[in-house]
Image 1: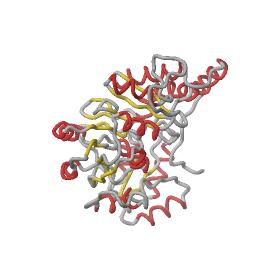
Image 2: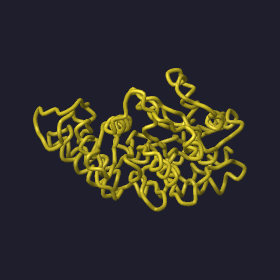
Image 3: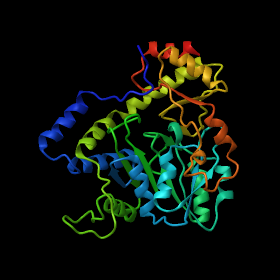
Length: 354
């Protein structure tokens, strides 16, 4: 029987929440979305959460509500999902690629300041694989230079840094609820902030420029249809309840691998963080051999990401200097199954493969 790399955990309560929405006759953005936003804000101990239809839309709105535009520069890690760079281009701004730390895989904070110019407007750290970026130093740099901080938290649901929840740092942070994430709504996203002006702008941007408090055709700005449905929000409410247990099981599975994979370079963890292991990512200098063994044993895996962002044709022209860590790591990383549905037998099979 194949061991899947990822497996969404949808149970009877999730299904009942969907049925309740369908029975109500109101499927689009409504009371369930508002409830999901309120519960998310309480969970993260922040003031505002604004739901969107995808994580990419959440990032896009985040930059646009900060008025990031033509010729502005946004510093991002060179090893990340393509959406992190694409949303900068959506604003007609320029991504500036920063190399990553070879141990944490997150943006190398020691290299950020050398990339700051008069055009720099924001830093966008990515909490890759479920481990928070080094936010204390990033926030110090942003304050020193007067820059926005927009966190890409798509893989970090429930993660903590200095005992504070990811989603509460910087000006804005953004989540994704794609099917493989630690909690899912199928597709969906969320923007979190403590700034009321940013929140009001987000509410308007995601709904064709309408003001949050007005009904009807009052459009105060250019906006989008980035609305989350009540069907998705209903799933999200149930998933949020289960998230702590999901992450607990992911950490337990990760600790099993840490103990058993003695000859493998297992994930490095900062002392002041709580990793949520969206992915359990190892490094191997002979990745092809490992992949063959996994395939031969019907064990799912992922490569995140097979090449750094500046290797894509539409991104290759943008500023990049020394990105040797990102380039090397992309040739070595391999993500193993770590999801909550894994049995002890599954874990043993994966270890036996190695």
